[in-house]
Length: 499
Image 1 (spheres, rainbow, N blue to C red):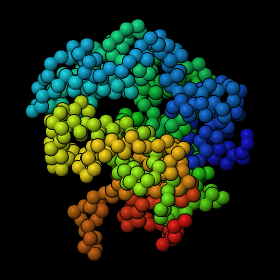
Image 2: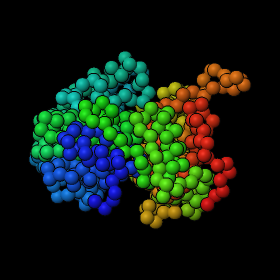
Image 3: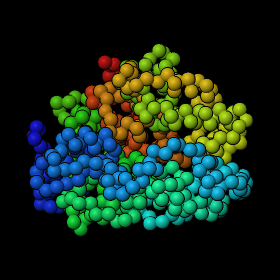
Image 4: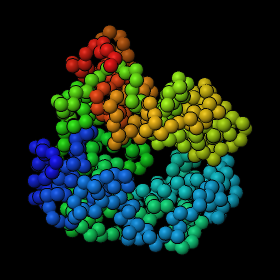
C-alpha cells in the first residue's frame, strides 16, 4: 500500500480477514475506496466490487488487484442476461404517448375532477414499470403506480391505479421479449429481469459501494449471495439523500459486524466540527475528525469555486445572476431538467397543455400559480413559479444554452444532491436552504420557537458542508447558529475576513 492505514482501516482489514460480513460506515472524505482496496489486497480470494456507476467502477479497477472484478450491478446483469436484449437496447426514443397508443391507450379518461389525456396515462404506466424495476417485488402492484400532482385524494388515486395497472403489466410483458417490442428497453429492465432469476454471483466476497443509496432490487441481489460469499457494505448512512426516488439505506439493519471510518482526509478539524452538528441532528451513527495537516476555514467567500443549492430552481437563479455579470458558469448535471420545466411552463403560458409529469394536469399557467400559492401540496412549486414570473421562460432557456463545461467554468453551480461524491476547494452554500418553520410555542423572551429540523434536510446539509477542502461559506445554512438544535460552534471566529 502507498499509505499508512489508520487504526480504523486496520481493524476493518482484520475483521475482513476473519471472514466477517461487514457494514463499514465511511464518513465524508474518510478514504473508503482506499480502505476497500486495502481489504482486496489482503487476500488471494476472488472478489467483486459493485459500484454505483460506471465511472466509479473504472476508477476502482485501477486501484484494486486483478483478483477483484469492478463493475456496476447493471454490468453484471448484462453479462448474464442483458446481452440477450442487445437488439432492443439502443432503440430510438419514442414519445410516451406513442408507446401508450401501441399498448392500447387511445382515449381520454375521467378521474375525479380531471380528464386524463392518453399521454398522461402512458407516462403513468411507464413510470409504474420503472418503480417496479427499482423494487425487490416479484410483480407489479398498486404501490408502484406513482401519484400525480393534483390527484392527492386517496380515492381518486385508487381510480388512477385501477386504470394504470393493466397497461403497466402489459408493458412489462412486452419487455420480456428479447427481440421485438413497443416499449423502449433500458438497462433497468434487464437488471430487474436478472434479479427475478435469483442469480448467484460467482465470487468469494462482494464489496457493495454507496450502500446507503442502494435500490431495493440491488439489495435483494446482494443479500441473496450470503450463503456462499462474504458480504461487505460500505457507505455513509448520513448521506442517504435519495429516498424520494426509491433508494434505500441498507447499512444500519445489515446483519454483520459494524465498523466506522471517521477520520476525514478531505478537510480539517473546524469543518469536521461543523459536519458533526448536522450528523447529530440527523441521528447518524458516526462523528468525524478532521486532518490537522489540512486546515479548512469557515467564513464568507466572494469568489467560490462552487455554489451548492437546495433546489434546481435555486441553482438556476444563481446561474442567471452569474451569467448576467459575465461569469463563465457550469451546472452540474447540465440544464436538461430545467429546460424541460421551462418549456412546459412556456406551453402553459401560451395556452397549450404540457406532457411534463409535474405539470401535466394543469390547463393554464394561472392554475399552476394558484396551486403553488394556495394548495399545501403545491408549495414546493412556488420557487419555479417565482423564477418563471420574474425572468420569463425565454430568459431561462437562454441561460441554459449559455452554460459552459466545468473545466472552463469560473464557478460551478450544483444542487447538493448532485454534489454528492464531489469536492471543491472553496464552497459557498446558497440561500435556498430554508430553516424549519416556527412552532406555535414561544421561548422565555416571547420569541417563536423554531420547529425541529427534518432528518432528511440535516443529511442534505451534511452532504453540502462536507464538499469543501480549504474554505466553506456556510451562507444559507447560517440559521443553524441560532437554532436550538444547532449547538453553536465555540470555535467559529466572528468576522472572518475574505481570502
